Amino acid sequence: MKNKRPQILAYYFPNWHVDPRNEKWHGTGWTEWNVTKCALPRFPGHKQPKKPLWGYEDEADPAVMEKYIDTAVSHGVDGFMFDWYYYDGPYRTRCLEEGLMKAANVDKIKFAVMWCNHDAIQAHPGCRAFPKPVLASGTATPEIFRRVTQYCIEHYFSHPSYLRVDGKPMFSIYHLTKMIQELGTETLRELVDEFRGRVRQAGLGELHLNAVIVPNKDQLDVPPAALGLDSFSGHSWSWSWTRQDSPCVDYGAAAEENIPRFRGFSQDYGLPYNPSMMVGWDSSPRTLQSDIFDPAAGYPYSTILSDSTPAQFEKYLRKAKEFIESDAFNGNFLMIHSWNEWTEGTFLLPEEEHGFGHLEAIRKVFGPVK
Image 1 (cartoon, one colour):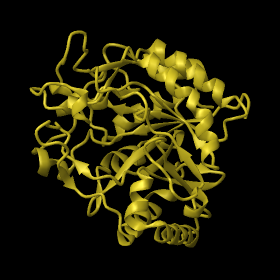
Image 2 (image 1 turned 45 degrees about the vertical axis):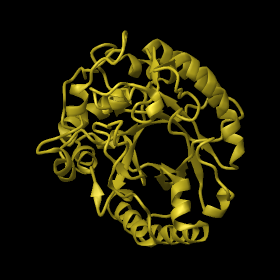
Image 3 (image 1 turned 30 degrees about the vertical axis):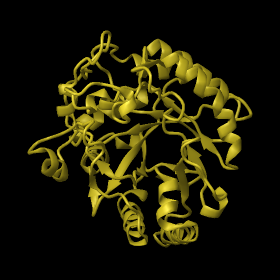
Image 4 (image 1 turned 180 degrees about the horizontal axis):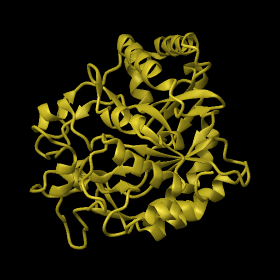
């Protein structure tokens, strides 16, 4: 693996276009841009609101997505891993199906989907008095598992730009331990095997099944091989940088604590592991702005990563690159959290304060997509 450039995948959060269910919950024409615009500084030195350099664009517009694609690949991002939701049907998919998949330059980029099988909670904004009320259940049943996976087989896997690992379409599961708890190990393995069979029946070959794992949070009581998995990926640094005694932790301190753990994660599960780099973190826009901001209240009142500048990001991308070029790296990808999580303060898209700085950091360290 030494000196081999990994494919760089940015997680893509799709909530910047109008969706009927969002309109039901939040009102006609609502998108998460409404939350971004309402953010306020919560303490001295806190920089909010974040302002996109290109304005509050509609990601379901193919012209907007064409700009995103050109920007991504010219700065070293090979593809997008789309957060994908299913609550009695697909949810927030227009940016993928009407935007990216209809973009004139979609052949330049790769994409895959990660089933975000968590509950939909009210965090737009989240209120301390009524923490995390559930708007829609993300509970997985065998029938829902079949519906989700069949939808992805029929709508995405055959697309020429769909991401493949060794020729196999990649499908990721966000909350693996939750799914195990809901389905049981044996049933989940049976569903996975059936899923693989349906992929073959569709003439798409074999499947590459990935799952997100957050060490010290997601504890697997069964060997990964028993679940039929092919790889794991990181998603964020949430397992080790959160504090309850301070609104902020320095980005560099969190990176110094987390990046050395990549080696252990690559060894602990007996499968290839794709490490994740965070661009930053600040979920305070998702809090009720009139409530007191206190990390002890839990998400979205989470500890902020401060000083997450392009220079800091570049510094720690280089440390991640050192790991990737070592013999310990056994994955295929470097995951970036994320492309556009504006209201969680972790985004690559250009904004007024830093411009293209975080994107330029990727190009400086890894070069453009070849």
